[in-house]
Image 1 (cartoon, rainbow, N blue to C red):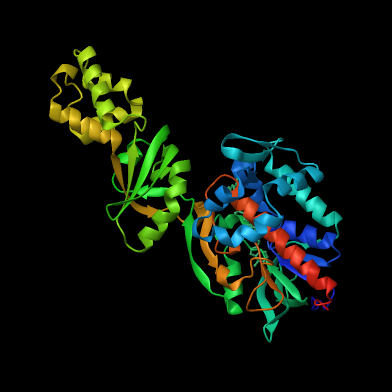
Image 2 (tube, rainbow, N blue to C red; image 1 turned 120 degrees about the horizontal axis):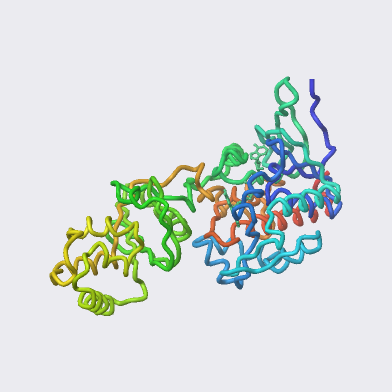
Length: 432
Ligand SMILES: Cc1cc2nc3c(=O)[nH]c(=O)nc-3n(C[C@H](O)[C@H](O)[C@H](O)COP(=O)(O)OP(=O)(O)OC[C@H]3O[C@@H](n4cnc5c(N)ncnc54)[C@H](O)[C@@H]3O)c2cc1C
């Protein structure tokens, strides 16, 4: 039978993801005795699939713009970013042998285009600094006494005889969110935090594809649109708009602009609000300019049937959908299109509406919105304000951002801050 482990470590890191590995390496480098507990057979499985396997590790945007990408909770990260931001992260990765480059939209990727390179380098560096990593080990409970951390209770896959305790004065919860659970991020950190009194802001899938009502999206599946504007309508009020790319799927909508608006969609649907997505297929043209363009096309190609003429305006796959929704007969000659029909066509091109019936589940969400209430966490140290010696880093916190490398920077920065705070406590002999 496995025995409990007493006072061998200063810091237990729960989760060997982006935040956990960064924290483990930094703390170990400063002399903290660190043990990382990871329930999966390999560390950082999610990090390996980030950025479609290329890992968009951060973004070159300046601080204020960067924080804006987190919405209402961006301010919580200010302190962390002031100390360890994108420049520091890039320099750090260079120091461990990973060269990076900046791409469109300020997105930073490793030059190798390999997320695996990032994981391998991080793991090697953390171990070289002295951090130990115990795999196949799931933390199943926190041990706290009189609002002070004492350790954790865990279960190891290779040890058949139940759970055992491991004692340490500092515990960092870096268990991630609840999205893509096959990577190990199954939301354990939420109930662990709750068990010692923390408030969890209700969690929702974010950066997630959306399901539409009816058959329209399915008819367009596989079609990707570039340079379009998407407007999110909630209860018939314009909520936000985004420019860029999107994709039709067998269930509805996906692609960058859809993922960006999806968090607000998840919130609205949860409150049973009515949600619609409007696609402006011609965002560069005002209604007047578009009308002039339509008039010209219809006059210049008067003998053309509408299903052929629309090739000048739309991708092939959209033509039958457009004709069906506007009620224009496919075989009608262009010079017979009435002013009323032209208006319908113009309106549809600027406002192709789809009703959203649901968001896809956590297992398809890039990120989890909600989490440990940041009001209960000190932004300068990531330490719990409720339990001494308990720290949080990464997606477990109630922070989430757009795509573009912002989420990983938040995980690395908060891990870095927590590790430095633990190292400071060790210097002050607070961990013995
Ligand atoms: C498909 C996909 C692509 C993405 N691409 C990008 C991108 O390019 N750029 C970007 O910025 N963000 C991206 N993200 C988001 C980013 O991956 C996460 O925000 C980030 O990984 C969060 O880091 P973390 O350390 O907090 O958690 P995670 O990386 O989720 O790590 C948590 C770890 O904790 C372990 N764990 C959980 N519970 C326990 C327990 N009870 N005991 C022990 N271990 C436990 C898990 O197994 C896991 O290894 C992507 C996400 C997905 C799903």
